[in-house]
Amino acid sequence: MTGSGDQQSLFFDPEAVPSKPPGQLPVDMRVLITVKAAPNPSQSYGETVCVAGIRIDEPQVSWVRLYPINFRALADDKQFRKYDVVRLRARPSSKDPRPESFRPDLGTVRTEERLKAWPARRRFVVDLVNKSMCQVLQDVRDGRQDAVASLAAIRPRQVDKVVIKPHLGWNRDEQAKIDAYMQQQTLDETGPRTALKAPAFRGWYRYRCQAPDCRGHEQGIYDWEFVALQWRLRRDGHSDAEIEAELRTKFEKMMCGTDRDTIFYVGNQQKHRQTFMVLGVFYPPC
Ligand SMILES: [Zn+2]
Image (tube, rainbow, N blue to C red; front, side, top):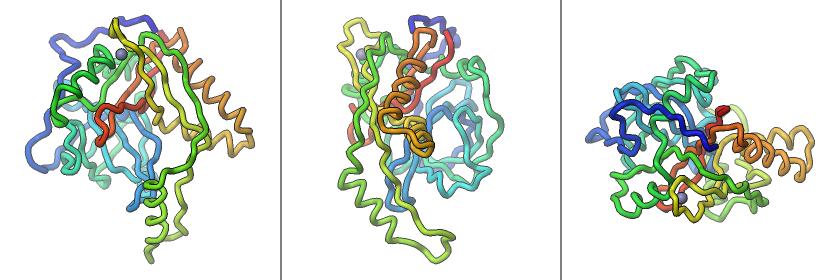
């Protein structure tokens, strides 16, 4: 995790924040999907997923957040995976002033290819690595919400640990959304609606960033894989203790091992701008 042999593009400013086009006009974009966050309860869709990626159709790469995406309703051929390159049309989000936020037109999503190898992905990711998490937070404190980064790539100096605690279930707000969704069954639906279940565990990364005076960060893990791994292990009959151990093995020992050049994809909450979460991890071998 010491390595930083990044060869960023000449004249490229990783701290530059994309500016949205004026109005709500749709934009055609090509995006390397890097983030698929854990599903969240939603009143309209049952669950929504925040997807983010790197726009690679412009001279400078930049972050884009695509929301809402209802993965349950996406037809199979439009279900995309991390590190797929997709083409789609999206409009600047009218409800979310953060500069990277767009509302995708899901009917236009076409998957072009999948970048299988770390080096092919790395070429786009390194251009977006920020100086430090401390600096990103400072910018949020100093700037307007529509002008500062709400997505970033952070190379931790030291990952202290993954904190894992039992998930205490959905909060009242989240449960109310699930209940409302369950009561709205429409006639054209083929099967009964199912309620989004809370996973067994929640997790947080405790780490220090590259700022010399960093006093440490603790950020919730909202990576789809953190939840998917739990469901997979549960289905295979593993106990809670085994699931917890496996989460630690994968998210701490493997992804943040000394043989990996670990980079966190982080994003903030629209309503709590200073609360950043780890939405995914980039962990190529050093
Ligand atoms: Zn820091």
